[in-house]
Image (cartoon, rainbow, N blue to C red):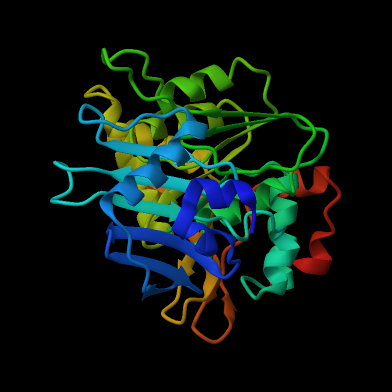
Amino acid sequence: MNLDLDITFGPLAPFMTDPTVEEIWINSPERIFIARNGKSELTNLLLTFDEVRNIVERALMWSGRRLDLSHPFVDARLPDGSRLHVAIPEITATHWAVNIRKHLLSHLSIDELAQRDVMTPQISTTLKYCVQAGLNILVSGGTQSGKTTMLNALTGAIPLTERLVTIEEVFELNPQLPDVIQMQTRSANLQGEGEIALRRLIKEALRMRPSRIVVGEVREAEALDLLIALNSGLPGMGTLHANSPRDAITKLQTLPLLAGENISHKFIAPTVASAIDLIVHVGLESSGKRRIHEICAVTGRYENDRAEIESLWKWDGIAYIQGLGSLPHPEKFVQIGAPIASWWNK
């Protein structure tokens, strides 16, 4: 057993070192769950309140983030790349709620995900060319559907000559590129000062000579800053919680409205239509299998204040059905010498 994990996580260490365990969560000291292959199970592990608190405090020592009555939530990255989230009373009813999400597949490439049946080889080839051509890609899906894993795999297809800047709430991405700057948000201090939000980081990223930017997850008004950045000619990618590609577009047109009353749908619709090129929607099936469920192209057109999308592939439960849509910006594929005729068969 890894000595550091044993010291930090104590009784939870066997779950942390088990490669089949995807996530660990504590509802109370007597009710501790884990997830394997997308399915949850109750463990027979029993802890005390002090053991739970000590595990959290030891884990947070590395992250530099704090947890107290004035700041009853914490979201932090652990040394092994796992993500820790904790909520304490009076936000929770009685017990500390602890989640540790492990990123078991975060190191996999697009081709390796295809080998695991997350997509077909043709789709993986298409996605690699889309990244290399500089298309703006939005990865959508529900919680635990594999959005971060997919986004991390897509960053692996970015040309090695490019400079990448990533912006996240908590470090989760692990891009394997020689020229990378990673930034994460910061919470306010005890005086309520010093907070650095995603919106600020996106603006700062544009001053760092990026060839491409990646936003780990778009949740609120930072959607506006991302759209403006992508409309400036800078390629980028990001993730968004949504039930479908169409819901993702609708949500992406709604979130910028949080930035202020002077932002309207009439401004956002054409902005989204021209800023986003591709939507990759991933899902977690009842069997625990994670898979790309649909890929849609954003045509660049909009009608009735809604950006138009076309399906390229859709999973029907048995196989992928190719849609009537076409890849956007064919001139970009010509520029990188992508052999379109041999892999895009309409």
